[in-house]
Structure formats: structure tokens, C-alpha cells
Length: 409
Length: 231
Ligand SMILES: Nc1ncnc2c1ncn2[C@@H]1O[C@H](COP(=O)(O)OP(=O)(O)OP(=O)(O)O)[C@@H](O)[C@H]1O
Ligand SMILES: [Mg+2]
Image (cartoon, rainbow over all chains, first blue to last red; front, side, top):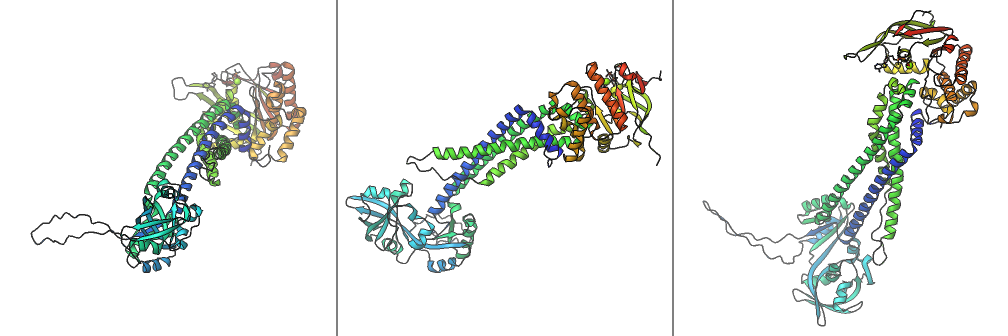
């Protein structure tokens, strides 16, 4: 007997040890449940973290875009008349944000905002010999823009360099036009403005559509091709806390009067998917916890019956109802604790093995594994509490046992 | 305060079962008796006469339906359950006929249990006391045997050592030798006599064995739930 352990601990542990088989089976059952929860939760967390990282390094947190053009009817109703005008939506020309230099300067002073950079997006035609492809051309200031969207991380050939006559293209476009690093392509804007640009770098964004359409040039070059000298179509912003983007966007919109879209809004679908996943994850957790609880409870109910004589003797020795209650609550807690320690370990090992075995076609990892220690701590804590809760009914039964009945047996 | 001579006193104790139902039966009728400190008493009577019921009431495991019970001068009918439990723990030791020991513990640990229940922690002092008690009952070599790894007589001697652990004023034994052969029964009985003589512990022993009963200094006979007049 450990001299530092009180009566309840000593007795609970001895009872569990003596009922070796029962203890082993229920600990196995608990650990399977916990392993499933740990495995599933860590996998989902990793998937989400990976997706978020991709999203947050491939688009700005907030984008300021010029207002849509609207048609205003000129005809007004005079007294006693009703007018039901049919207003056609006007065509949306590519327009610059008014006074974007001033807006950029003022946004740069906001404490929440870490980067501000103007960009010029337009569509154009890339031509080489007989081949032509429509492309989406983004003019950027590389120094700041590449801090928001990490194109340099995705460069597979050349440099993320953007001088006046440079262009960065995707791998697919390169294949389509049969060009590689250092080749020249002819880019024509919608207005007819034409430039001959040199391929300074080729990137792979991991998405065929993006690789065949997206291109990046210097801001001035894009302005010239769009025939919108000195204009910008968007102002891209990053903030210190990406999850505060929505509130910052609302504040920006209120103070500048320009529409500001946060990444949270533009990726609403992703967040819907995450919350659906979380709901189903929670449901699975609840049901696993329930079956663990019932398993522990049923083992303890049987154990109370088996040990009714021991309980009677303990009561005859002066053991209180509270002490008996705690002996059985503790057994429940210990079963949950032991099971979750084993289960969390199994789940963790399972994750590492699964992550090591399952590889992408080229042998690289599918996504980085996020193993939060807090997940394991939570699993163990929750399982222990569940065990204590499950033990409540059998423990009360044990405490309420009439010692006379128990001893007469 | 007057000196407390009686370890135990019952005044008009009755016990009924199935109270309020058509099969209500009174099994103990108006029992009045007292035991002085250091007495060694046999409780005899035919089967079903109410000996175990009486012993459970005296041992505070059960409450009388009527009448008063004094343990070391404390009137017990108005005590709350928690106080009853505490009093039972320090004033009374039990030895039962069956299921003597807790099988999850060794002999030594079983003897320590009453102290552990009372003190919460198994201190060195309790261990020493259990060790000494086992030596007294001649079981030192079996100290670390699990309860089931001992003979019936050995187990019963451990149970007596355990009943002595918290140094109670009164030991209640319900047919402690009923399950043993005559040689072991005799050994267990003599051990109780020795404890009684050396430590002055009061014993109340239920037995069907008239030879043993006659060796007690006093015999109380229960017949049909009443104390029979001494022969
Ligand atoms: N829980 C109970 N409910 C109803 N009747 C009971 C209960 N317990 C005991 N009795 C009755 O009380 C009477 C006395 O029983 P008790 O066990 O005290 O007898 P005893 O003298 O110890 O007998 P034995 O020598 O066989 O052990 C018996 O008639 C028994 O049927
Ligand atoms: Mg009996």
C-alpha cells in the first residue's frame, strides 16, 4: 500500500486489479473509442489547417474593389403617377478605384493591417505564333504583393522577378503555348494595347485552371495593357489576425466607402463545410462517449453485485457511504483515464503511421500533420470525467447497499 | 459524568420486519440486557430465534424498531447515520461466519483496513499494529498471503486480528467457528479468550457449539426473540 494514497484510491485500484479480465476488456473498449476520436479529430484539424494555410497564402485577407456601375433612371414620377421602370444592368467596364493612393496611405496606418498593395487585374490574350490563349493578367508591386500571395513559394523555374517586360506564367500556359523560361510572348489587352513580354518565371499553383490562366506582371505593365494608366482595380490587404478579417473589412468599408471583401466572406463555402464537418464530428464524439459510458457503467454494475460482501464488510468496519461511493466513482474515472491514455497513444501512433504510409503520387506528404498536445489532454480529461459520470449510478447503488443484506448474502 | 460500567446496554429493544405490510413480523420482543467491560459471553438459541438480528442491531448495522441501545454509554437512537458509522468504526469489531476477508487484499492489509478506513492513509503505525496483531494470532508467516490463499481457520484468525485492529471495546462474533473443524474451532476460540484475558476486550459470541458456550463465563439464550431466563 502506497502510504501517500488514501483509502479510496487504494481500494479502487485493488478492485480493478483483482477484476483483471473485466478491467482489461473495458479499458480496451474505452481505448478504441478514444483512439477513433483522436484520430478523426487530428485528421480533420490537419486538413483544415492545411486548407487554411493554402487559402491564406494564395489570396489577400481583404480585397477592396471599385463599386459596381449602376444605371439610374432619369424619369421621375410626377404627382398622381406611378412609374415602373425596367432598369437594365449596365456593362461593367474595368474601372480604377478613385483616389487609391490616398486610400492606400490611410490604410497603411491602421494598426490591424500589416500589408497594403494595389493591383491591376485585366484579361488579355497571350499569343505565340499560331497559338493564342486568353489569360488573366494581374499587375502587382512584387515587393509587397509577394508577401501577401506567396508566388515565390510556387516558382518551379526562373525567378519571381517582375521588371517592366517580365511576366510570370503557370506551367499549363507554358505547355499550351510551347514556351519556357526566357521565351517571349505577345500579350494583347482588350483595348488593343500590345506588349512583348519575357517569361521570367514559371509557377505551379497546384491547380490546372490557375496554372493555365493566371499570370503576373509589373503594375505599370498591366496598366498599359489595360489602357488604364495610373489606375488600379483592387487594393489587397492583409491583417494581423486573419480571423478578424471580417470585422476589419467592415471597418474599412465604413471608413473608405469602398466595398471591402474579406477572405472569410469569399470562402463562405469552406466555412460551411467546416461547420458541417464539426457537427458530424461532435455527433460521433457524443455517441462514442455514450457507448464508452454505458460500457463502464455496465462493468461497474456487475462489480457492485460481485463485491457486495466486500462492501458490507467495509461498512461494518466503519466505512462511510461517502467512502464507498468514492471507491466506485474512482474506479469509473480510472477506467476512463487508463482507456484514454492507451487510446490517445494508439490514435497518435495510428496518425503518424497513416501519414507515413499514405503519400501523394510523387511521394510527398498529402498534408502536414497537426498534432496538438491539447487534443490528447482533452481526450484524457473528457474520458476520465465520462468514466466518473458513468460510475454515478453503480456507485450510488454500492453506497446505498444495506450492510446487513450484503453480509448475509 | 457517571462512570460507564456497561459497554453495552439494551432497553426494551424490539425488531420487526416488513413494517406496514400484511406480513409484518416482530422477531425480537422487548430485549433488555447489558454487558460489562471485559465480559466474555456466549449467545445461544435455536436457528431462527433472532441471534443474528440481535447482533446486527448491537453492531449498529441495523436499527431497532423500538427500545434503546447504549454503546459505551452513548444512546444511539438519535444519532445520525454518519455518527453511527463512526461509532461502529471505533467501538465495535465484527467477526462473521462466512466471507471473512476482502479477497483483493493480503492478510496484513485486511488487518490494516479498519485503520485505513478511519485514518484514510496507511501510515507506518497502522502497518506495525497489523503486523503485531498477526503475530499475536500466530500468522506472521502468512502476512503477505492473499486472503484466498489461506485455510478457513487461518482466515478466521485474520478476521479476529482485524476486528481487534481499531482496539474496539466490544467484539461481536456471529458463529465464528461454525465453519471450522473442531481443532481449528478450538484454536480460534482460545485465541479470543486470550485476547479477552490480556486486553479486557468484551466479547459477544453467537455459537451453536454447546461445548464452547459452556467455556464462556456467561451464556445468554434467545428463544423466539426473547431472552430466556438463565438456567
Ligand atoms: N430481512 C428479513 N426480512 C424478514 N424476516 C427476516 C429478515 N431477516 C431475518 N428475518 C427473520 O427473523 C428471524 C430471526 O432471524 P436470524 O437470522 O436473526 O436468526 P438466527 O437466530 O441468527 O438463526 P441462525 O442460528 O440460523 O443463524 C427469522 O425468523 C428470520 O426469518
Ligand atoms: Mg444467524
